[in-house]
Length: 317
Picture 1 (cartoon, rainbow, N blue to C red):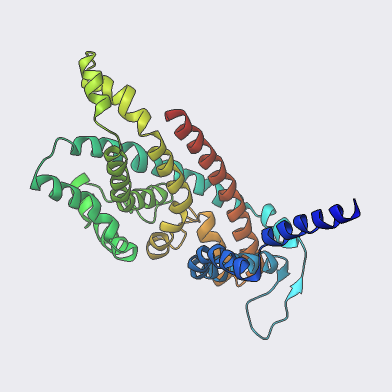
Picture 2: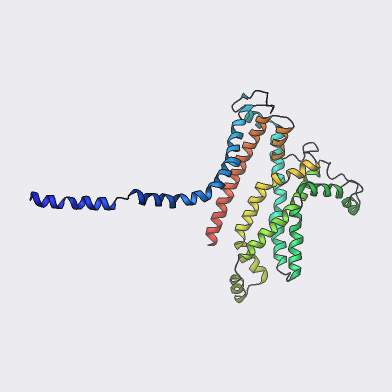
């Protein structure tokens, strides 16, 4: 029995040694695993350097009081900047004006682009190319150049708008109309991009649904209402998300070129306010606190809209 045990013991040891991966097998596996990360490394490095690192620095700066002078000391204040910011009437007013800006832009970036894109389906040949180019052209105009042209068009008395309407109104520097002017100019620039997104969404919808509905006797209006628009809902949610996130940023050069936040802060949204705190009031901590709150607020809204978009996409599938 002792001899038999001696002969049977080495077998399991041999199997275990053969199954154990050697150094030559481990290295190729590690190399294959690391290859995707090597391709992603440049993008990840840029993302960390230009996004996450400044974000962390902004959060850190929001806890200090500093006038942006290199020789001035940075005094830690904890959450003092946030408390002071929430007590300022200008901050609450800027939040309301940001909301009205977004609400005013949504019809121009969601509803009107759908109508323009659906109308473009009836245009064919070279005329369709010209039609698309004319719609998209405003998006290519630099915001500062657009602001200069619109200031000339809206010049009181001698401007094109006043001549057509027969009025003598100062559209840019009147408190009741200044915000509307910013909304119209920003919408004029964004509408081309929005129409292009809707065109892409319509192109992704197969024509089999329309043909099946026509066979069942559905009219063109019923097809648009019950087939095209529901299938286009993820695209429309993307446009809503884009409008909410980008409108304060895209309106900044127009506001700075035309009204500088006036008159009486009538066009000062949250994005322009944090810039004003940093480069006019030289209160870097207060500006950083406004930027952090802006990031958190828009982050929550974006998360909710992305969640809704995913639910809509799953429902459509």
